[in-house]
Length: 276
Figure 1 (cartoon, rainbow, N blue to C red):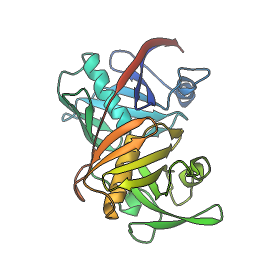
Figure 2 (cartoon, rainbow, N blue to C red):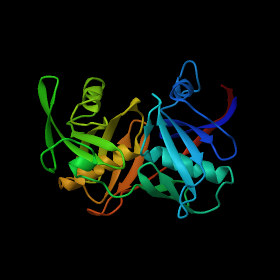
Figure 3 (cartoon, one colour):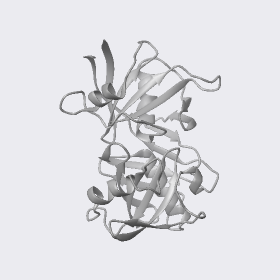
C-alpha cells in the first residue's frame, strides 16, 4: 500500500499529516510506530489524520496518534497544522473551521498574518474528569515521585496535563521526572507533563514531556494547560507569551468556563509517498 503524506511542524513539534478522505487507509499501531520512527520511517512526534465529519455541525474529524501508536484526544500544534493542510489542499476555503476530535469539537481560525488561532475549549480542573486521583479539587497537589514530593497542578485540555512551576526550565530534570509523572498511578490514563518558569505575569518559559512521545520542541495543549494553571494560581495575566524550545505561542484565557485560545504558526516541510 502506497501512502501519500505531508510532513509539517508547529514550532518544531512535527507531524505526519495524512488525508484519509481522498485515500483509503488502515493503520495498525505497528504501522503508526513505523511512520513515526526517525530512523526506519518518516519520523515525527505525532501522526494526524484528516477524516470526513461524523456530525453535521463540523467539517472534518481530526485524529491524533502518538509516536507509540496510541490515539490521543488533543494537540494544539497539530490543530494549526490541520488548518493549514486543509486550506493548502483545497479541502476547505473557510476562514473558521469547526472540527471534531476525540475530546469534542474545536474551532480553527486562519489569521491575516498567516498564523492559525485554535479554540482549545475550556480547561477542566475536576480530578475525576482529567482523570486524576484526588479526594477533592485543588489548585495544586502533592505527588510522591521517586522518594520525593513534587507540587503540581492537574488540568485537562481534552487530554490530561500535570503542570510544575520550576525556578528554571534549563535546570529542570525533565528527562527523569517526565516519565515518572507521565506514568504515575494517580494519572490512570497517563499524562503530559509541563515544566513552567514564570518570568513575568505576561511571559513564561515551558518544556513539555508529552505522553507517549517524550519531550517535544512545542506543545499547544501543554501551553494552554500551563497558562490555565498559572492563571488559577493568580500568577499570570489573561494573555501570555509562551516561550517553548521550538518557538513562541500566544495563549489567552479570560476566566473559568471560557475557552483557551492559542495562536501560532504552522509550516509545511515536504510532501511524500511511503510504501507500506
